[in-house]
Length: 152
Image (cartoon, rainbow, N blue to C red; front, side):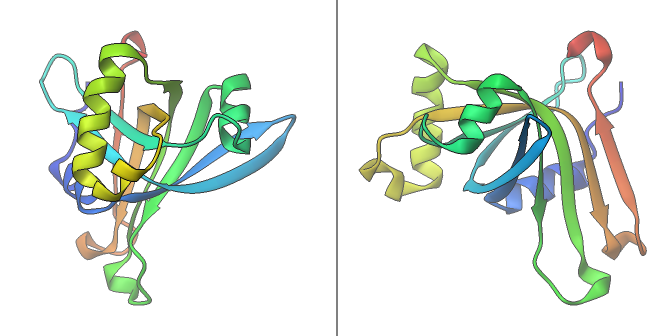
């Protein structure tokens, strides 16, 4: 198993907006949303999860209910080539419920206090692959983490 590189963790935790890509009937779609991450680097069971809120009637949620395989990205917006950073990821989406939902709501509101004013429908992406591109480490430098197949 590959260990999650600390540079991947740092990048994810420094940001709060991701773009989620879904696909239905061979028609791709993207949506942008606020997220918080839940990253575990315990040696036997590493995981990366993104938690976000979205209403059940949105296009991306409806597509994810049909095809739970999703992809996405998080990018640093810069025009300086030497500072370009971003991650691309794939994973499985699911709706949070019961105790997991309650715990996640507390974390989401802590990260985004304005969410207290909203009805939260929380979803998580259980990441199975992530690639960080970080030009600060050298032009086009990539760091990759992938879940072992027996963990997926």
